[in-house]
Image (cartoon, rainbow, N blue to C red; front, side, top):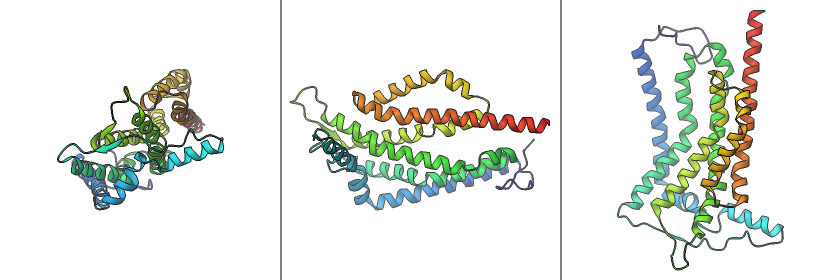
Length: 282
């Protein structure tokens, strides 16, 4: 039986929707989501100079904000070892359509990143009426927190993970006679992969929230496998960062904090559900 279609505020049920009506509703939510991504992608495509010079290629220059911050920290500690004067590599385009294809890809990625809050809100508008009023109440603020965590992950990947990785890879040589001349496709793929991977990893508390609501996860299970989770986080940090302890700690600590926050989220959900269960029995 089809579930009654509820208003967004959890109001009175409206007329019951058929399966075809649900598909039609979903289709329009997806169309609006894709349209928002396309609008931002077109805007990014037209702003080619700003997008590539000030955003995409910025981590490839020594005057990037993160490198200047590292230099200031090093000078505050009385050393210039953290100051970067030259990254030691050049970026080239070795394919005829390389720059055009990367221009389109970057525009789409930026379109997705900028439109993500609205696109997720559109999908959430479709999902939310299918929830019970109690579930709608407990999931208030979902769009806000998902969007905030996504943005935090992007910024963390762009300003922390990417500069560290690019700096290491740019200076790594198996022999001094070999020059580091990276293809534009390789550079952009590395940058976007790191940023999007961090954005997804920062959604851990939200994922834990829904898994706990579904009964697939509990704070006890997360505590039991805490050591395993830390090992996995350290392995991930070792893969995406240079092989030095400082860089791995910079990446690992925020992820470990997110894991601990997720345990707290799961514990809160369990307590709230038990409280409601006891109130319903009283």
